[in-house]
Image 1 (spheres, one colour):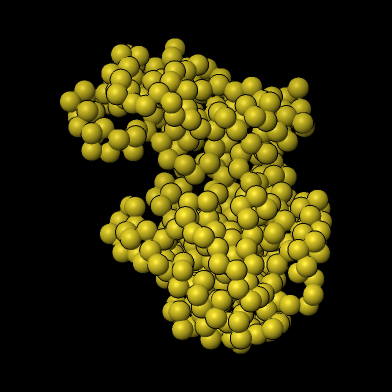
Image 2 (cartoon, rainbow, N blue to C red):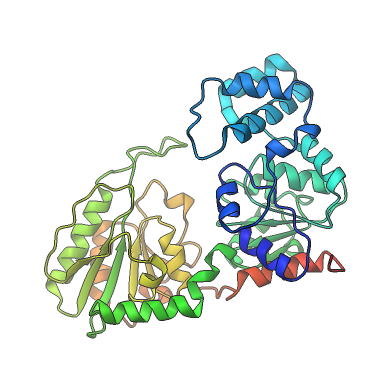
Length: 397
């Protein structure tokens, strides 16, 4: 989400320093951009940071996606900051109880920013380091922009605070209204969309979708329905909500039943990479392999069905009507129907009825009375940059 903004800012002549945290370093390096990490910032660490880092990481797997040096630096710097705030005994207690969630290195980020003195700080809605960076910027009177990736259903607890960031960039009006309902002034909010999704509407992506539609033979007048499946756990990973692991298969069975009854429909099944399911060919049923570009696929179909997959949001951005089956343990985490992104169905029987009555002419709002869809900016990267530049008054050469 932030990398397109950073790259475009560099093109415009701004001098950009990227603090690439944990796994982000791989993506930034792949883009050919120089960056810094925790391992470059030992000089700003609290007392004992290196020793704490080595102790905390001694039993960790060294073959993970983050370099060992960065892992040690991340843990050591964050933990030593926690020790300086609450004492060693309490710090160890909190770390044993919460792990990395115990970290919020605001003082550390203050020391880093006081040295760098940026004109503006840009960070996402992620907790810990990015939350601390924006908080520290506020303390130092440095303008800050928070870019919210999706719905801020947990992050509102700090993003809705009046002094957290000068401007907050949100996905759509619904997210902005949600933050306002929790105390944020609407003067601080700008609907920009998410720069990570800009590529969905790039002309080459749209054209690739048209080509895919023709080459797969989907241009025969049938309604092409994409079922974007995903794993449904037996219990939510962060609360006690119970799920039905067979829900994806039940939904697929209903969709297969509908297209078997109608010659004007085709079902295209796309399994999630984490699903271990063997596709069964059937009349009017095809599969989309994981190698098929997803964004092109969205432009090749007419309707998308999801539970809580991000594909639902991506399909909405691509201008496709979306049906969300609101029976997942993740429905609250991806409130597509209440946000006007999708038409929600609250039972499998309702899904069956909606699909039987679907003619291809309906919009999200006409399917079952959901909110009208709010148009999103076509270029979120430029929209975010406009917000950033509104807080600064010159380009740094």
